[in-house]
Image (cartoon, rainbow over all chains, first blue to last red; front, top):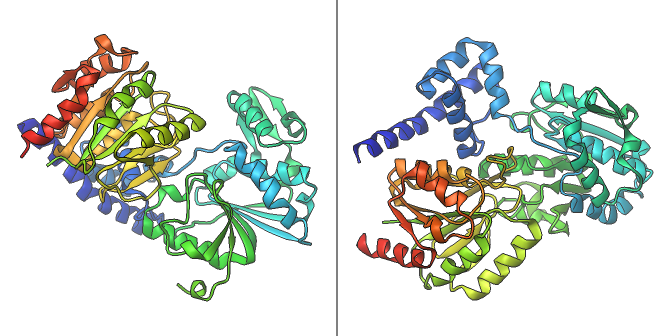
Amino acid sequence: MASNQNKIEKFENIDLEIPLILEAIYQKYGYDFRKYSRSHIKRRLVHRLAISNLESVSQLQDKVLREKDFFIELLEDLSINVTEMFRDPEFYSSFRENVVPILRTYPFIKIWHAGCSTGEEVYSFAILLREEGILKRCQIYATDFNRKVLEIAKQGIYPIRDLEHFERNYEKSGGKSKLSDFYTMKYGSIKLDQSLVKKVVFADHNLVTDSVFAEIDLIICRNVLIYFNRDLQNKVINLFYDSLSSSGHLCLGSKESLKFTAKENCFADIDEKQKIYKKSLSKSCIKL
Amino acid sequence: MYKALVIGTSFGGLEALKAIIPQFPKGFPLAVIVVLHIGENQNDSFIRYLNEISQLHVKEAEDKERISTGTVYFAPPNYHLLIEADESFSLSTDPKVNHSRPSIDVLFETAAWCYKQKLIGVVLSGLNHDGAYGLLQINDLGGMCIVENPENAIAQIMPSAANKIAKPQFITPLHDIAEKINELLHSQN
């Protein structure tokens, strides 16, 4: 049991040290992970410790403060960079059916992909909007706090190993032609048709520390909120509410919901299962 | 006092879970949290079925949901299920661990951090090594570990790996596992 005690103490120390390193990162570099899901952060830090020769999170903190390159590596660990084209195809087919007819009635459509990561979802939406004949009317902002992933998103070059999966997703999503109409293949990679993102502005924006930047008709933010704690989820949902035009739409990830947030009653369900919502203007929601 | 029971299984898991979950009585004092490697549609119907034949409420775990005793939670397919220190769930779309998402190791590791000695971990039938390292974490942090006896498991690889790596306190035939958990609950009083 003594060895249990040692191991328990090791993890109790890590729990003490995590808030310190997150505060240090915020003070020094401005990236704010303080309200991210703590067990997610802990897993990433514990695994970083295991592959480096460091003994404790405090030593990690020391290195992070003194070596910028090391911080940039750690920033990669802490970022959420997993995405795919037409992830959750049922979501895309519901979007075609339930949201596109409404968007068609708009002369001009402003779209915000919040936390777009490497951009696979941005291209997926651009393809869908082109197939529906409304891409030309869209102004799209695709944002992430991580500049490195934004560079990848701008180029739209993805490894060929994921292609089969993307193709399957595209077919299931109700795609109207062939995915291969939208990319070219070269050197083991695919490059997405750059005319798809002609009107996309890829920009550095941090959901945690930055504020509203435009009035938006459609916000897409999928599988980002699950990485935040309840407090931060509330803050970001409020930011979305304030950014949306009066009947704007919000699309979350399939397993994300407004259920445990303060704005639970401030959106109407368009498709409850696929987490497509529409802003509603009840009085109690305007300032919460 | 134990607070939670985590269970990991893959191939053969439907049968194994059917032999255990319905045995838990109303007012069961633990939260039961399960990772089962299974497809999306199958998961929904299995949860519905298990809910019908069990005395506990069986449901899919939701992001940021508070964990209650007497409820059985399943990880949603294609997401990792993590436990926060305040006894709530988080989901993640991080890369697969042990070729699996949800991964048993991810659940077990974060459950061990949260519940430490107040946790029971169980590994059942399955065809890969997922869960072995997580069970070791549970053991290391003072939790109690039970592995299905591989000799009569539908698939032996998962329980065998868990035995080898985690050195569990109990190696138990499937049909005695619910009883073993009951014994643990009674012996702690």
